[in-house]
Length: 332
Image (cartoon, rainbow, N blue to C red; front, side):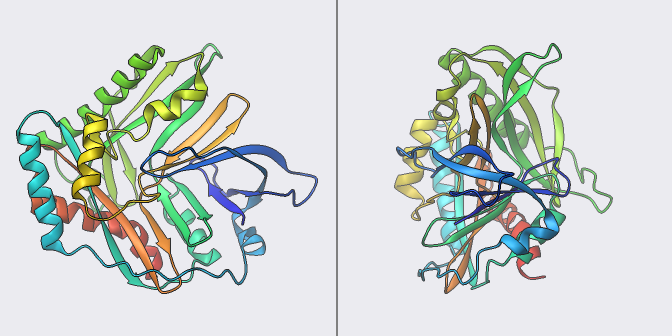
């Protein structure tokens, strides 16, 4: 099955990747897809080419048989209870942050090319992707890069990771609607500190944080910084960073164990990542603001970052806002 990507900043261009070359204008690239719980997933060599957004329909898979799966929406009281239990754990002091995720199951929607095209047009500041894994189709518009190869002002090859956390609804004129709360400021700082600590432990050098800014993703704003660094071991950076504090919590290992023990629903590929590699150049983004398409239902995955100051009702409302990324397109 092909893989489609409309990467941030590429305007009308869409990349399509196949196991076999479609024509002589393709290039080779490696793909790795990782679930939230890391496993030994190998890299797959694919053949890619750039096409126009309007051409997506021409290459879109036809008559794909998706499996059925019985997945229920996480009830509000169940989610708020999970958040409250997590906050109590955070108040004990060892855990600093936990990301609580839930699912929203809606009537089946056909993962057609027009859904992908609508996501691309609606969210130009996101990495819009479509991927079939045999049982289902994943589609989403992710605002968060896990790893990117960049060049500094001297032309030196370096690497960059996003620190993205804190959420608020944009105002009608697409500005911040309010000041960031102390909880949101702390949440983002925990993510930034977590990434810097992981890179330092890994042995990365020249670690530098960009000025703090506000990044818009659809109708939502997030606190944002990019963290640049140097390493002579790029092949291990994805393992070092995944899953970041933005999708898991801190300390990462303990937060992940808490999620496995208490969340009640497997995340599968939500909170995982997609990575492209060509030689030592990487481009990887986190699987979030996404939906999984089955034959009998479509399942939206959303999460919220918790600190000791979190309110169960506020976190529920935040996840409701995050579902709008996909719902606005699926219901249009």
